[in-house]
Length: 87
Image (cartoon, rainbow, N blue to C red; front, side, top):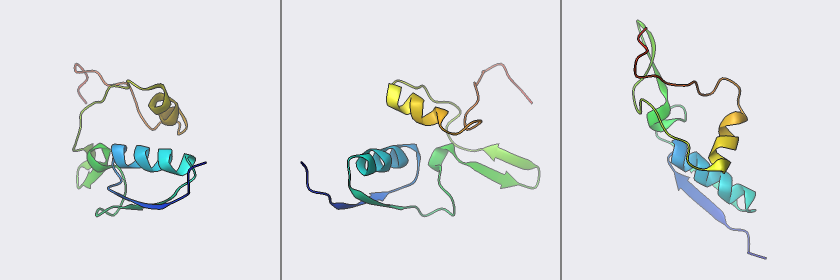
């Protein structure tokens, strides 16, 4: 059995959170450090006087079954994206 370690993950974006979750599931103690006031990184929604907007990645592709499962744990977290959709 691997010895449990205390591990720091820098950044609470999609990769940092996935890394932290995997490490925690492996039995490690994980602390995530993020400079912004909330997690999300380039996937975060920002507020403006005109409403919220996604300022980073326009879309992402799920290529890993574990990532797909993680996305399903929070209803409404992600929505299908279409390049033809304009609001």
